[in-house]
Length: 400
Image (cartoon, rainbow, N blue to C red; front, side, top):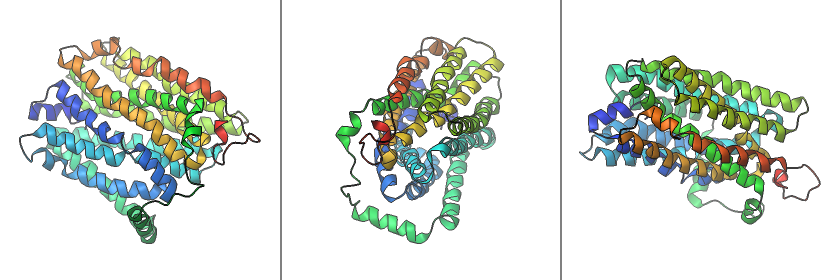
């Protein structure tokens, strides 16, 4: 959607504020299904939740151009379409977290999650590269056809070769009948949310998600308006091309340090410090340069370093509460989704009033969401966890 925003704004006559509403409407739905997705992943299996939701969001992506032209109310129909996409994609990362916490041991989680995260970066890279060409050759509608068709192709492959039909039917029947809740599967809400480490995870995830979603939503517009003669494929591809090896390196380094004897919590702090703190420095630099090459370098460094969060807070949540990691990640990511909901339109308002993109960055568009509370909240309380002999509930060994 960010790649199409400029072209769609020209076709439908949207201003920056209206474009920000369309961009942020995805998060209106996205923040509502985080906890549900994590809870379902903990109960029926994350892989089944991902497959079912992907089949639905792929179909909606493919028909989005048709929805946009159903009537003259383009803004309303596109907003509705983005809300549906958010509802369906909101279950993905919590279900993925639940899946990895159940299938992958602690010393291998960071690299595994980084590989999956690199897949997300590769998808963004592919959409940015191919999407820029499709946008130039066939218009913005072709990007939705491409991404929706690619998603449905992935769903078919997973259904055909990786999941049995029996397991999928069983999962659907369980969902239709309602999830049985046993005494051992209930989440101890009060005890969970009294732990400082849980709130640290929520604040840290909020900071990381907000900065990422703002850059994801507005970076194409920033380059398009600041450097109008620049080739779109450069700034839509290069930052995500850097993010892939950065994600893999962070996961490899994290697991290597843990296997060398360093405490997991210490390694998680190091990765999160780089993912939030160091990446913020390069985001700040974006507002203080007029060079296209330097802007691409700063954007690439910021987005690349943000992938270190995959080896920080993302896997730290799995360390804290393995038995309900999907649920806890859903709670933390809901905070991040709320930030994503407010961030793009907040930047759209000053842009619609005539401020330049660089002025918005210099005035604090991105850094305040990223700065103090994210770094402090993501570090201090997480140094508390101890292992063994602490009397914690099963699956909550990291919360004592």
